[in-house]
Image (cartoon, rainbow over all chains, first blue to last red; front, side):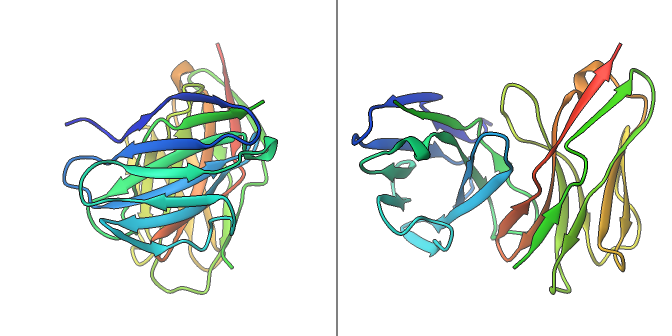
Length: 114
Length: 112
């Protein structure tokens, strides 16, 4: 049973480009969460999705960031027109039911904006 | 808003000794969960231990145990018989609805 799979592991983008981060949850998990970890900081919640629905996006920046979790395929975190401040590790987690029991995290995608 | 505070940015312990990492939290919810996650240099977030707030008994997982003081909103992690593989960043976290609120982390060094 594969864990939460995130790809790519590392992503380098020039300022102004788009970044697409992918997350495949564990088998049987229909709840996906995205977190961002800036250097030397803890993880900060961004968005919570179920299949085809955004449940809580209160942690997402208002502009340039979007997330989806389609009926088929992985969850995608999309960052348009990246800036240096977007450089961070982005973690995806999944759970079989909503919240509270501890998620399973992926290994993260480290985004570097040059 | 929920906050989680880890007051020790760095800690060190001798191999085979015991170390305690501190965590305090702030919540108005009556039902919540608390967690300790370990993040080694590989960056993988690994669940170490989980505590349900309505349970008075402290959680234990092999060499890892917690001291959960609900009234004081304190949730410390004790690592017994420390091993070199325990060296990592440790994060305390608390549920708030379906999200987790994390502390800033404690970097643990294990000295041989």
